Image (cartoon, rainbow, N blue to C red):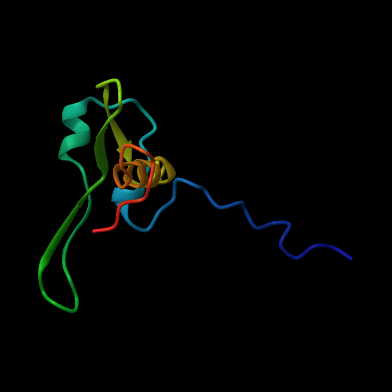
Length: 95
């Protein structure tokens, strides 16, 4: 018995619905990254205009700044947010 899906090509992981979600295939300057937006649209419920950057800039404990892609580096962005919500003893701080 043959597999009916054997002629179906594998999806391209870079083929995304939202162009802002695509991870670039070449290095980009900080200026290029700063100009990119992942989402730029009015909210369908409130009508408020929303703009979400493609890259988030974070500062490491050693002072190094780096830009994280909102899709590719989502886990590291989440880790950074969790670290920012802890006090000096590592206890979670709730606002």
